[in-house]
Length: 66
Ligand code: SF4
Image (cartoon, rainbow, N blue to C red):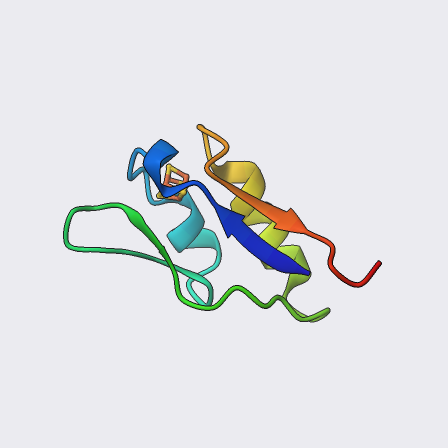
């Protein structure tokens, strides 16, 4: 799985950072930064929760294994 982000949509709520700090951080302007876009099987639950928590759907998962 891989993370895609539309950073222009991000409103800096930080939900994703709280739920999955391995993949998401906020920059100095309070906007999301994807630290790494690859999501392992062991990480997918936390990343899915982070994606679901985003109020503006600025981040999502893509299955590139198919
Ligand atoms: S949860 Fe969404 S709006 Fe909030 S920081 Fe993450 S990407 Fe941005």
